Image (cartoon, rainbow, N blue to C red; front, side, top):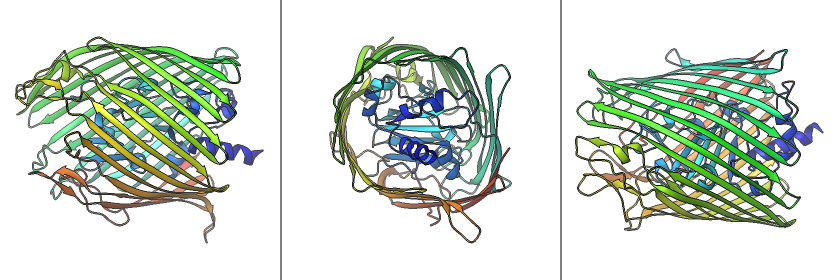
Length: 618
């Protein structure tokens, strides 16, 4: 029985939670604090329609085994995702999903969007997200507007902050200026409260952000996460989370000026809600608030950014019969933000936005081997008006083959800056902007070659239109007529046996404007492998091994004077861990080949590092 549970858990974590129903009791009936995996249901799905979701789940155990310090340590190993960080840890980081724009990936906490509304173009800065307080990362590639709403044109990243029932503290690093510590403690009170406390601190200082620079740019990150749950009755559960982070980092002013900014980036989130589950129905109501408070000091000039968001979201998932399921819900989101640049570059904005989304889905099992799903969402925005997104999926099982065909749409509403902002170059906001929109087609084949060997291949083609950019006169933002076409092929072959997994992947990707111009920072080709084994026999006993390799092909980027071709990279990381008397000791080697590279161009990336640490359970 124990082996069966382990196999089910692994299958769920690696193949999109297709059989999450089998472990629902583990998640839902965790009244005594028995450790079990976190199962997250994708918004706007129901039991049958959930099979049409393309989702990668990174568990807490996988995060620990990789010795990750920040989320970039995880996301950089995922095919179809390209990370560009303007220097070392703590520096500004952009993520490009399948060659789309960096502001086309929606970022969430527990399924609620947290993109900063005081950012000029709406992108999320992944350089501020360190990993210690995150339990699970979900990665959705492809247009997901029907599930998550605006900004999920290319995909979505969901950070889950759940109760970790393994009490522990950990320390790791390689010097006094490069280390990380964290603690986790959970208590179940006599009156039934499950209370969880997590905290962490990370210091990093390895070199200048600018390639060839002479100074040291460092970062300090602090996190605090409080989680609470309580059963109200046999079917109703209350849960709440408070998450905060603060990152102080040294930013360089430009690719040629090291006298940069000192950035103080703070973010706070409060989320509370109720979950109700019966035999054929799941209901959820969530209240969410977050704010960003960012300051950048540069030679006496202070740039200030602030934004707030309030969200209330309700959803119902229903099983009508063994062949039909459906769901529906609504979400209201209010955003307010402002910023003021006071240095040599001056810019400002102030305003608010509101959006009401209504969504629903329907899943129908035509027979035992064919499933049809449709998802729809309508968003009413206070400036762009009503806009609809939808997704249609058909999945077919034939012997050892699984075929999936998906058509989906997405949109991104303009930011506060694009609507109301201004700067000293004369660029002004435009309240008449339309949202950016996309259409995506995907075809996926899963082939189980042998019992432990499988092949997955996805071909996709997307078109993004009504791009929001500054006009040729640099006087305001407008919707451009030049579209962006993206197409690609993702392949992965996976071997799974007991405590061992090995996967090889490659991706051919092309992102071009309709005039033929290549998009910068979009490599056309990459490949790699991920290997992990637990309980590997060695002279010192069983150890855990994780090996991750990724080749990133050449890409176009601005080198300070012109757009030029940047070199390819080969990055290899190795993590080793061993449990000794309840303490887990680990060793991590990053960038073993000691690649000296710039990604993006003109910005330095870390060379080889050796990191040691331990995690003590109590």
